[in-house]
Image (cartoon, one colour):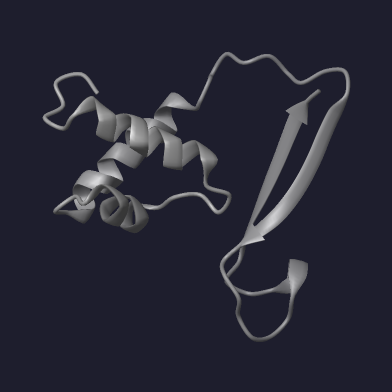
Length: 96
């Protein structure tokens, strides 16, 4: 956000959509939501937000941990679930 030519309210809107949209937000969505003129700007913003969510020296989860998995890739014909082609599996764990 430092030295950004865009208003800080745009950054807060981007953070809101980045953290609250159930299906996530991609650069095309962000470009449309914020009215950016280029895909590259939206992509750069998302990369900056994604870098902020990584903690390299994080502690391992302990105690009660809940784990879930899901697939991203949209609806396609053919096999469903784990054997589906063109889908990406995402695993999530949270400490309670």
